[in-house]
Amino acid sequence: MFARTLAVIGIIATLPVMAADAGRSYIVNERPASLGTLPFSDAVLSGSTLYVGGHLGLDPATGLAAQDPQVEARLVMDAVKHTVERAGLRMDDLVSVTVYCTDLELYATFNAVYATYFHGKYPARAFIGAAKLLRNSHFEVMGVATRPRR
Image (cartoon, rainbow, N blue to C red; front, side, top):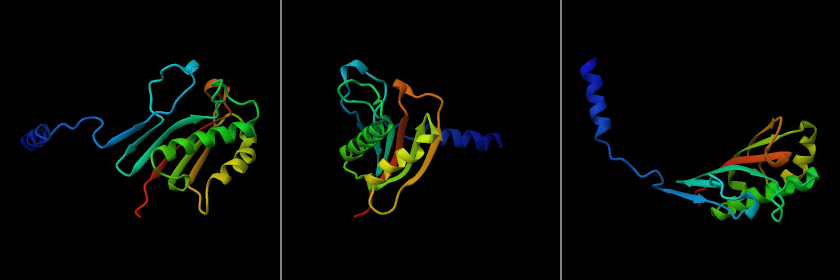
């Protein structure tokens, strides 16, 4: 058993080390100067899969969350759409979406806006209650998209 373990370790040790960003594209959107430099990408495209990081519904001019939840829902979905499109994909390429919300009473408000961003079938989705979100946002949205075979 010990010899077999050493043999496996030896094989793993001889595998080539790949660069951390080999085959990946990083998308970083413009942000208001008030947000400064942030330590994350808005999305990472790895192969044919796009991982969309959490987006907030911030006013592009101020960097603050909209006071009206319906306006904020539109802003957050516009931000996700912008990121997805920068990667060369469409909203209909999303296969999974996670929504964090500070008030579950806003479920219908969010859905009314969300539904307008898709044609036909919707991605799988979770709508999760959160006590508090950054910048006093009501919503944070993240997702996964895949490049379809065409």
